[in-house]
Length: 116
Length: 108
Image 1 (tube, rainbow over the protein chains, first blue to last red):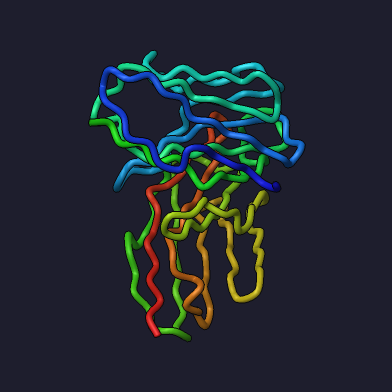
Image 2: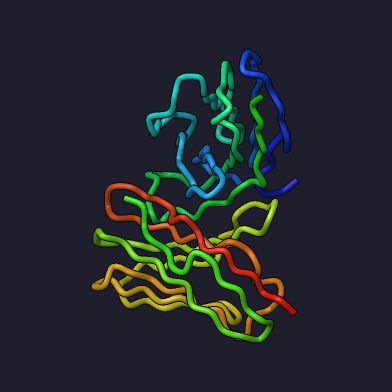
């Protein structure tokens, strides 16, 4: 496979459930990102990892817990979510370094999350 | 601070031209343009790193006016495949943020 792959593509969960989103990149990139995309809202940066180390946490609630075991894999663990957390969660990767305008992002197709 | 995009939405007939604008209240170091088709991942179109830089790919081009803190994306002789939501992403030296998007619909 090439590019950035996200699983599952669709997820429905109750507020008391625990689930995880997975992202895998086959581009040899060193930085990985989680973005949230809600209806009629801009892409919101959630987390950035560079060389497996978290370099940005954009004031995300603790019910979202990221994990980056290596430069190719990124997880987003979800627990006790709220209905307003329903959104498309996009993973992206880039060459690495600071999250700046010089880093071109390659996005996955996203995981559509619905919280009941 | 999030950049502003205009228009919010535009509908075109195939073969018509369109311009999408992206502006910021802060000085810009770079501008990215991405396109996202419905149900798909956003795809990188181009990056402009210098003031006054212009780039083009096929019939899609962009300009970056550093002094005016804005960038414009030009779509010439639009094709059906151009339909989607276009996002600009801007870096102001402190952070990189995306605009709210412009929804472009090209009709036959």
